[in-house]
Image 1 (cartoon, helix red, strand yellow):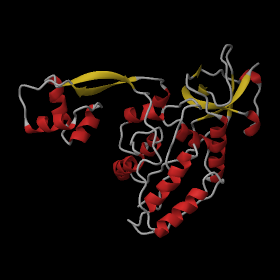
Image 2 (cartoon, helix red, strand yellow):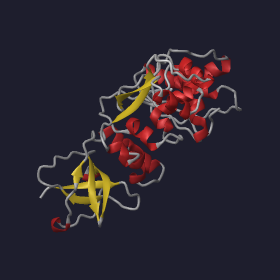
Image 3 (spheres, helix red, strand yellow):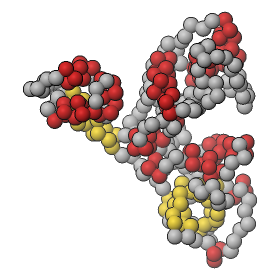
Image 4 (cartoon, helix red, strand yellow):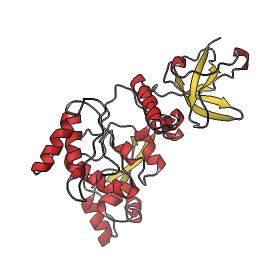
Length: 306
């Protein structure tokens, strides 16, 4: 009988063995739905030799319920999950919950509605409507995104929709995102900042090396870290953004856009997971992607952000 070891997203449980139903093709990293009592839990297929466990008889194994249609978690990411769990003395399931952040992220591709100007002028024009139309020329986005850009309320834009000045368009939520440009707007650093940036940049690709910048608020630590991020991008590597407070999300995205030329890159969703964005807005970007898809994230230390 075919059996497999699964790490469910329940930190209180260890690895569990399940029976693989006929016709279900699994590999390490496959994301599955497994039964546990009356409940159904999302889990990840793991190599048995890496997670030793007391095996139970085949006659006691329950069959897996489903194989989710998402790319398997790649081996390097599984090794990173193991290392993170060991380094931080955390259950492997807790780390996997960060890799697979929500069930909505596993639902597959979906569509969302965005809006764009039609060029039609509404019969009743107010100062707020005039301001919005001037700011939104040539732009497209959700009501909330456009309202934020135009600095008007959502109600103003919904009124423009009813008046025919904005039209709805359906777009794929998983459409390609912009890539940050490491040479878009390099800052002018002073001598001390250049020395620190050069030290961080030289460490890229040299293995695990925790670095802490000591400086007061406003001393330019973020720009120094950005230079290390830029060097990682130039080398085709990845970096990870971590923000300690929800309130820092929008200011950080603006600074990132000013430095790298885009605010919505494949890396930004991770930084925004602790933002005030609604789960429905996060899930398309947090959804698992194939290992061949580019992903560029930015390193942002939680204790030293300026």
